[in-house]
Every structure is written in structure tokens, then in C-alpha cells.
Amino acid sequence: MNVPELDLLRQTDIYLIDQILKGRLDGVRRVVDVGAGSGRNLPWFVERGARVTALDPRPEAFEAMDEYLQALDLGPSATAGLERVLGRIEDAPLERGSADLVICNAVLHFAAGASGFEAMLRGAWGLVAPGGMFFARLASSVGVEGGPVPLGDGRFLLPDESERYLVDARGLEEWPDRLGAERLEPVKTTVVSGLRAMSTWVLRAPGDGETIRR
Ligand SMILES: C[S@@+](CC[C@H](N)C(=O)[O-])C[C@H]1O[C@@H](n2cnc3c(N)ncnc32)[C@H](O)[C@@H]1O
Image (cartoon, rainbow, N blue to C red):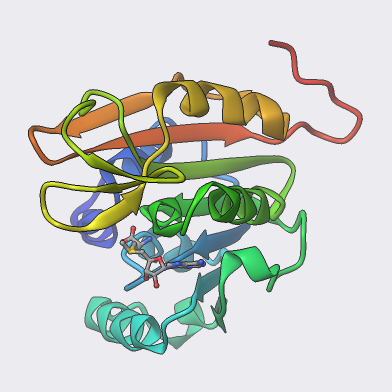
């Protein structure tokens, strides 16, 4: 990997970099980043000429994204394929089944409760095209049991005083089956000692006419 390519990845989530280095994302042409924030996970895709849709309910996120991408000096032809959509994933703002890759990084813990989580997750998963990949990192209770204070309906008060929706170990295993997803990786969890845990789903949607074997 040369230095300019490394520059595209400096802010990218390390587990997404893992998928890039494994070569799983080489052929991706259509990406949706759900809750894209400052767009830190987008430069590698944008520079390769992928059609990228960044979804976020906060206009400030797009201002930060413009600033970040301009600083990388990607050029107008690279960013021409970037579409910004203001909205919430649970409101179905995008065409279903249209993306080779859906990224949902550090977003699902904003759910207001269990039904909100399901609406967000199903909204994001529904965007994946047949045979496409779903990459999500989400706050979980794995390895931090007893730390976060339960507030009810899956919400917790974390030691940093933030309130988050946390998925437990069972939910992390059961949701891919409920969605009908193939697991490309086992669930992996990073525990930030005494603070929080982030788990990673790397899932694949069945191709047309394909049945997922478990
Ligand atoms: C912690 S930031 C993560 C940003 C980016 N994905 C990253 O990895 O750096 C969470 C983002 O999710 C967005 N978000 C929150 N609720 C959302 C929803 N219901 N639908 C889509 N995006 C949402 C927030 O506005 C924020 O930009």
C-alpha cells in the first residue's frame, strides 16, 4: 500500500480496514454509509470511483464531511460520485436492495429502545443488494456486564455518562439469523476497559435464489 492510499485510510475504522485488506471490498461499486458523520470511512471508496451515498440526520455532519474530503484533496471527479442524504435510516430514505456495501458504524446505539433498534437495523440491512455486504459496529454489553446501569428497554447509562442502546451477546448472535444473513466473520468485540464495548458484524445478504446455510 503506497502513502497516498494510506492517507485515504488514516481515519477509517480499523475493522473496515481489515475487510479492505482481506480484498472483500475490491469490487464494490455502490456504497451506503448509514450515519456517515464526518465521512471518515468514505475516502477509499470515493477515490476508487464508487457511487457513495452518505446518510445522516444532522446537516453539521455534511459540513464536517466537506471539510474532511477537501483536506484530502481528492479532486472533483472523485467526489462527483458522492451523494449526501439528510435523514434517519428508520424512515426508509433510500432505495432498498441497492448497495453492494452498507456501512453502519457506531450508529445503532442511538436507538431509543428495542423497537427503535429493530427499525434502524432493518432499515440499514434492507439497503443491501443480493450478495452484498453489511458492515456494522455497535455498542454491546459483552465483557462490560455489571458496568453500565440499565435504564430499561435496552438502554444503559455508561460510565462516561452517555446513554446508549446496548445489544447483548445473545442478540449479537440471533439478529443475523433473524435477518437471514450469512456471517462472513464471527462476531468480534473490543472492550474498552471500564468504559464500553463495541461489537462488529460482517454479514452478507443471500444472492438471488440463494439460501444461507447455517
Ligand atoms: C458516532 S457517529 C459515527 C459517525 C461515522 N459512522 C463514524 O464511524 O465515524 C454517529 C452518527 O450517526 C448519526 N445518526 C444518529 N441517529 C441516526 C439515524 N437514526 N439514522 C441515521 N444516522 C443517524 C449521527 O448523526 C452521527 O453522525
